Image 1 (cartoon, rainbow, N blue to C red):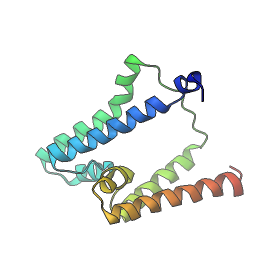
Image 2: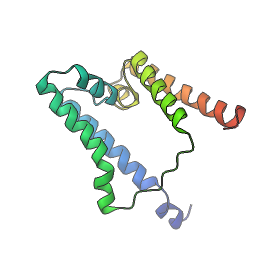
Image 3: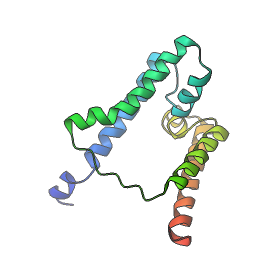
Image 4: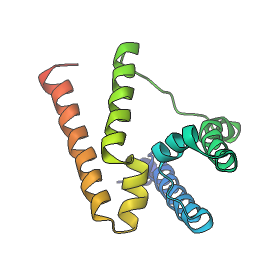
Length: 145
């Protein structure tokens, strides 16, 4: 690999993003005593007490606002979605169903749970990943989509 490959790659951005996610998850658990699992934060918003709703709303607003803040300093990469609306809705519902069955999502289990050494989270994350690998293989290679 030469230097131009490194400077035009996503290594630095990917490493920086991973470090920021790790630092944010660690700060969240240390300062708030909670796991930064998005599905749990969102689900808790529906049934939370008034004082518990504020931080959940702020967390979710921060996630939604972050691309706009980033865009003030850098160009956003182009985004291409090859799936139609129906496929996106079905995929979203399946993800919601999966997080319900797994009692958490990839951020809760994959980032926070594995870092705590939770066997349940390791199994859940392996299940997410294997299901994702199989889905991509089936849809791209066997179904040709």
